[in-house]
Length: 627
Image (cartoon, rainbow, N blue to C red; front, side, top):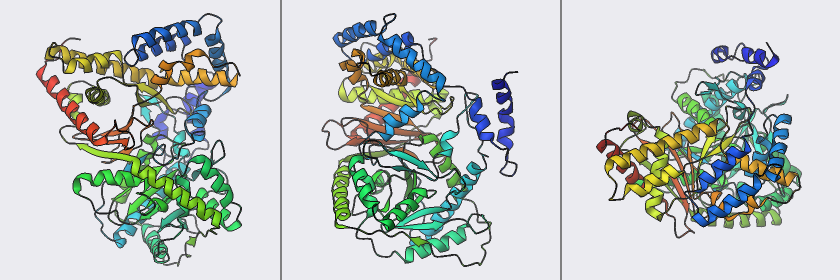
């Protein structure tokens, strides 16, 4: 038995799932990680063929034939493509994951637009039934207790290993989300993680009325504070921050990354400021005690909460009650609206939602731990010395943020007519069904298909993040074109629908096994930059720009909790669509920018609802044929 097999034997999941916090095996997480396969570099010819296929439904025949020539040139034996491919294969042999560092830098740390709206996703949780400060603080205390419960599982490496299609998944992202923070830099940001090492974080940051507090959440014996103790501490924080802070320092984190990096350097020149910022960066997470949202009608309430989660509603509302560089920020408003926003660099949505599911379940449990009567120290208020220069930076950040807030158009739609149960009853993948409905909605609105991004998890591989499922396919275009055509029978349309969902299923399987095209093409491009060779024509081509301009940026983030994740569009004339398919309904969050005359989130929601219903009618009208 070679070393790999031995490790695999040791890392068999049967034991992993049963482990409790009490019998920690040293390095078990490491053993599990080492047993995972490395991300493969797909064969060059395969990716190039699939790239041409992916372009077919989104570019003109003239553009396609021009790209065909460029691809032929790129793939010549002994040519530039082969050289770059060999470079990638060498990189794959030398690293744990040939993509992960590159992806972290290009997708996140070197991305200079504000993290607010453009990068950080939010999650809308079901409205809580408290209506006052007392209820808000009780819920916040219980939520913090739930976070600490999950943290204990992470610290003891007792998290059950997750599986997909019978394969164990990389659990690394769970170890990156607590006690971490993004730090702005002049050209590239960085991430600090205080979860490792001897001096682990013992505190969380609590923000109320734009004021920051360091709240120690462990007793002197190392046990976590109970909900009762936390409630007492939160009350102290509340009572010492009754007035809204005139200078919302947290608003600086909403700015363009280069501007924020300059302001950050200014801020850190002062010793008091530096200590306060470090306390926020080192904290386990941030809990934002928000002022109530302005009252709105029931039908737009969830959409307003989504906006609150993404940006806080602007400098006059709750945007100053945040530190957007913090990986995890839980938001609890006085009116019962709650959720979170997270900085995207360390993790994808699923680990965040798994943490949320755990916490939401935990908040429903009755309190068991009886509190000790030992008086707890006053939570430490973090102080900031605001110079005229910093005051000016805050004013600029406020103006820029308020423009962004005005520009974000977001609609949360709960589709009540059916949930994932219906497509399943038709033997169709719910995800493929929803993606096809998005294709149909977009086609009906604009008369053509567009490049569509759906994130696929690469967590079957060590340190795997995501690749792209390209939901627009030759098959999806054929279906959407046929849907409103009088020349096609219902049976033909239903067959095309089934074929298209099958094609989506196949692309998804290919992507999660490391064989999609997007990250491979990116790798070849970055390899060219690293080798200092001139950029291949293939990447300078119009068709490549079209393929990378995702008018539909989508993600399925399933959760046990009846919540929905939301994020902004990735292009100025696009949509961000996130959905959580529940058994009997589907939660959607759709975003667009008001500054684009061609996009409208409510209109997209309307067309999406119609597409889902029309597809159901079609399948019910046409008997399943033998495809």
